[in-house]
Length: 165
Image (cartoon, rainbow, N blue to C red):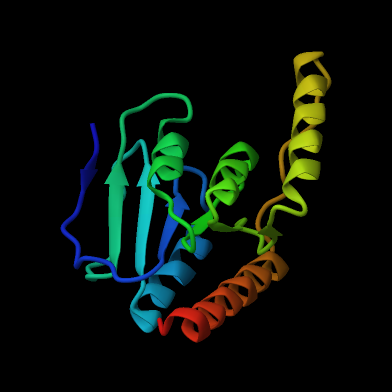
């Protein structure tokens, strides 16, 4: 079951956000960019999300379950869309469809670097499965926020040039 708030039909590329683990500062940057650039931003999560009132911002709630939100994003993403996620398998799936990916720390995930990221993810998962404590990622730093803002602005500028966004 999915629920989505009413939208102005999007024209051109969209931004899909893997919102379950997306940091608040990143969401706030995306909200400002949606209104400024007039681009549809959709947050996808298995919990109810509150988004600011805007014809350019919506939330899509999916059923609870492992990878349900990721699978919904992968199914809906199209060539030219931007996906915001730190989930490497989701990034790989949407890159294969021609979408662009930026992680919340501002790193562009591409066809050129996704195989390496998948290998590292699998290696770390193997360590965790063997009982090794690998720790989690560090908190989002000011440098990460700036890097995300730069990557988002670069993507928006490229889309403006190529699609008239």
